[in-house]
Length: 132
Image 1 (tube, rainbow, N blue to C red):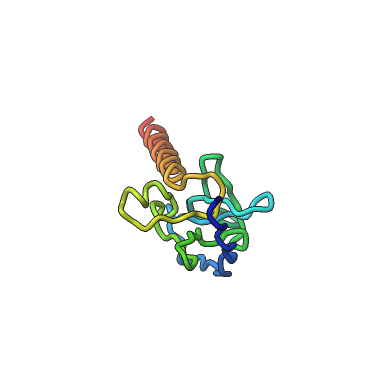
Image 2: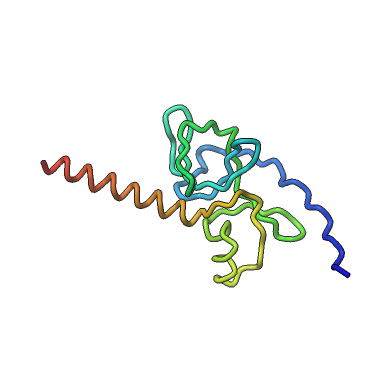
């Protein structure tokens, strides 16, 4: 028959974020529509914080709607501090222990690339405007 089911994992621990510790590109989870979604930190925004994902950017996010990106590394939850840790395929390719990310179907790496591309485009536009 099928192998016995693994016992359910406990929920991730409560770990409040400290605004001064947030850095651009850091994987986080955003509480939205009743669930936690993997996003990439962009920076402070008026009235809150700005994060991005392949599904779009979110601005003016209050800190209380953000938490660390958690990965289950049996037998405990660990905080992801780099995008590769939150991306199971990349973590495996780098030789890290296999893990499961408790988040929506988002890629932090793709979000970070999109944020970098947007920043580069904004810089280029500013440079053109200054030259004109």
